[in-house]
Length: 484
Image 1 (cartoon, rainbow, N blue to C red):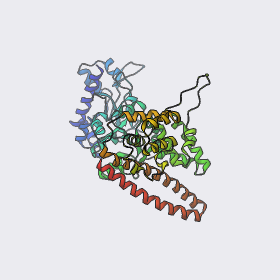
Image 2 (tube, rainbow, N blue to C red; image 1 turned 30 degrees about the vertical axis):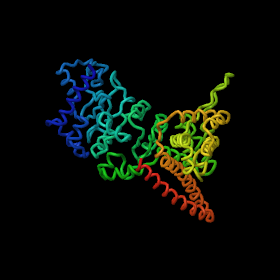
Image 3 (spheres, one colour; image 1 turned 90 degrees about the vertical axis):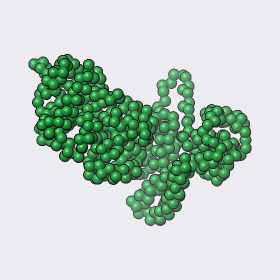
Image 4 (cartoon, one colour; image 1 turned 135 degrees about the horizontal axis):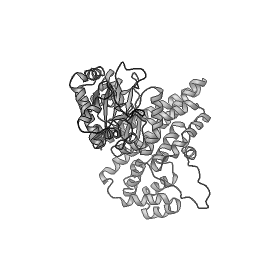
């Protein structure tokens, strides 16, 4: 019974930490790290003193044989003498629980003063009940908060997750001694759509955040990065500055994609050739994406790099398959959610949409001319069958999209249609304004570098107007969100 052996080991470690002289060193270490015993109980933290057979002797006394304990990853065997000994010795133990809350493995932290050759962290090996690439530390504790907040905080270490929970951030999880994996994100995606990546602030942590981008995008999760300047990791930050300071920093996150793009642009330079090289470097990421996620990402890359959407899409296209004589199918186009909702509103309430759409720049709505044309025809009074007949010839994918929109009847009520459209258009324009701001800031930086004072002044004046418009749009979006 491997689950039984892991549970018995967990109870043994817990009892050792919480009571008696043998756990005094573990309790003192937790106190030095700012972790309370209540928090330790919540995560079932444990301790094992130094010694080769402490756990083995205890569990054999409870009826477990050596073979079961070896298979559970709790013992190792000397290849020469075939004698067995404990995997964990003189360590603080973090039990790793499966999705049913059962202990399946452990992470052990060496105590202060340990030999320099002793690894700081030691993790259980893979067993029949534990595969580290599929399990997340702390998920059994964090699951409810993740679903309630539609957000997960992904950290690197066990102490990071524990410290954040103690500070009031219950949605934190950590990989189990490995890099973040697609299987782990598949589990998280069933619980939420947003992720905060709180990797360590050193170069290795930033590189880990960058490597994880492809996984977040492929999982369909919105990934953002939090910069914890002043601390090397989340544990140190909350212990040093407290929970309210951490909450304030959560409001200052940036898209993980923006970090990656900025790193690529920094690496390749801000010239047109450098931006082109940066897009080439991002092309493998774009090729892994599908559907609406791919189109949205291409638009964001285009905005941040200052290169047209069509060019980025070509650079990020998939290589053509070998010529088999069979024409490959054309990939389906899927609009981003705001555009899909606007299309629905125009299909169902074309007269009411005349006011919100009056004077709106078509490029704010969509760069696809046939989509703008279809919306204009509907708002101008053409019947849906007539527009569908036109779209069947001009853009069959659009015709199918319009038909699906017409078939769905329950998205908005009539009284909510105009406010919804205004909110959608405000968000669309806000994204376009923010893209323009990024591009002009790059040009201002270029002017500062080259000494181009005349262009600098013009860009600064333009930027001032964009910031004013951005502030107005943010207020409009906030008001609209508050009334939803």
